[in-house]
Image 1: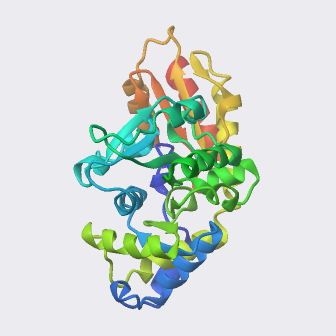
Image 2: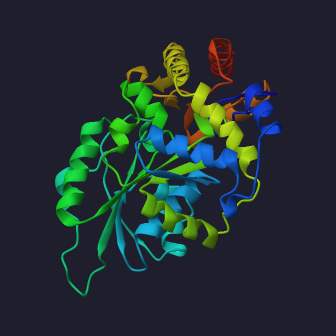
Length: 346
């Protein structure tokens, strides 16, 4: 990469193997179902998460929106964590485009809704009320420092959903980060949900794309919704080729990103004036903030680091998020810590 970029794993460039695969991809018209590379990617992605079928979509946001619109209608309600990505960072799509009402609940330090509160939030059959149709989950949980939520939580939510006839969708944008951190197969988590989307970009390093997976009937309906949203692609095998490399080569190496995130947190903890909790780092995200004694604010720090071609994102006036990925290794971590120390202490 041409910069040392900790702002997100979304900034990661495709690997040389991905660029080669994209240049050589066999293609067809995906809307006709004739792109062989897309078809292979969708089948392999579905198998990885234990589902019958998959659908290539442009992004995790599109995948979540397609899943919601395929399983709930206007005026229906979705139960969801109040700090979930689908609520906070997806432009209100479920409401503005689908008329689906988010019913938000508090989450704990890992991003889990309380199970008793979740069940009590399900609406009774009353014409005055929206009908609860969906439970929306996320793993890893971005707003909680990328926490990896264990499978037993999803099993418990599945039990609640089954008792009340509800569907469950998982925003698994960083699903494989969670699975690697927990040392389980992704299907140990996804077997408890009806639908799941995961990103081929971010930690898996492909340049674009996500895959939405579920039953064959669900994907049939989801394909119609994708078209409605303008998501029908043509020779999309060029994208899918990079996704296949991602599935083959990038999942297990996510453990390296997690190790580098812990290394970063430990380094930050040695800098006076930085408040960080290394023990909270489970995946590839490090959240930290400036202590009260530091005169600078987040914008000052970001500008001074950028002068050294080091980029980091703010999470408020005095707080930050740093995310590790394929293009961040021990040398980049060490340089970040060194330069941040210099910014704060000269």
